[in-house]
Image (cartoon, rainbow, N blue to C red; front, side, top):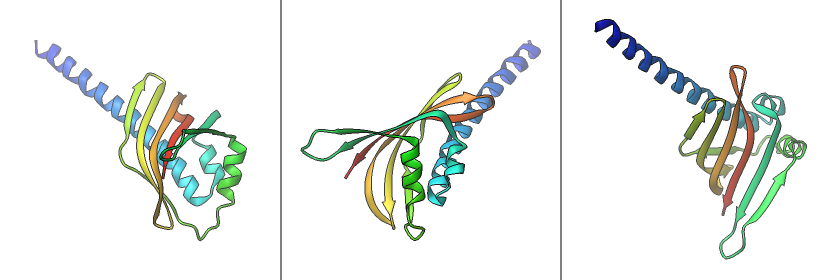
Length: 147
């Protein structure tokens, strides 16, 4: 009986550790993405993106229909690289709501975006990630932007 109890207990601990490991890796992937933005480092950003990554936004202005926008990766990289170095960007992720199913994950992250320490807009990011080998890559990002 003691061996069975030990086995079940060990299995539960292993499963919990494995889940935490995936969640931590996902948070680290997203953190690296934003570090790349802050540093204007497109190589760092690319290191955590899947080769087929897509970027989409839903802009929401009071009293107007939502506007949907897709951006190419090359356009995104050009816009990041063109931000002057004296402009301070900060995206405050308020909470990570991560769901994992094998090699697929989503992270629902409400955020506030600041430019030079002034609130620019807020909304929610939805990151879709896929596991490639032993790392997580961002497959798509869609966000809402509310002023």
